[in-house]
Image 1 (cartoon, rainbow, N blue to C red):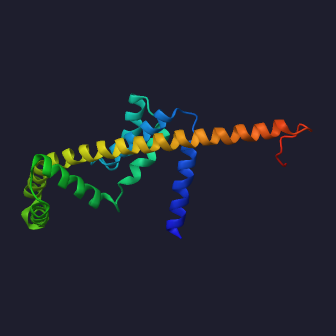
Image 2 (image 1 turned 30 degrees about the horizontal axis):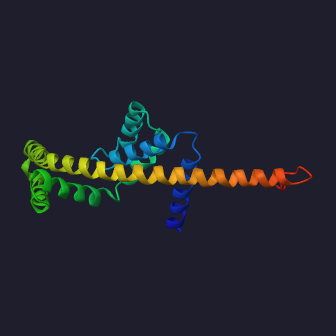
Image 3 (image 1 turned 90 degrees about the horizontal axis):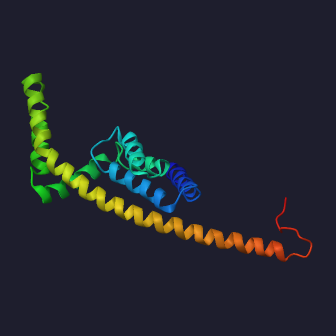
Length: 184
């Protein structure tokens, strides 16, 4: 049941996007910005960042904000792990096993807060470059794909919708009694 409800919410959001009083470019650009930011390691402030960047770049904010929900507590580990591996292939860095071992060692409370803080800081610095590089590349690719798909879907839907409206209006005008053919 929860899956069906989630799917219905996604469908309703998409239909809402199709009917926004905006250009297809601005809507698709907002989605692309939201997807890009969702794939960066900024969880917790992604919606605010999406609104800020969409405002600065002239994109639709409404279409981008829900994209920030791509990364959430359930999806963060697989998304960021994949992005890290991509970034590691680009710029190098420690492997996931090495990070896992360093994290386990940095969790030892007997070391004291100062040692723990330095260990965590060192770990974050070593992993930051590959994570950000991977997030940037994956985010750019996913954002570009999201833009293309959304632009196509919006323009196609609007073209087909306009044709249906024109046909309905023509059918209404062809009636001898002048009725539109719609029922109350």
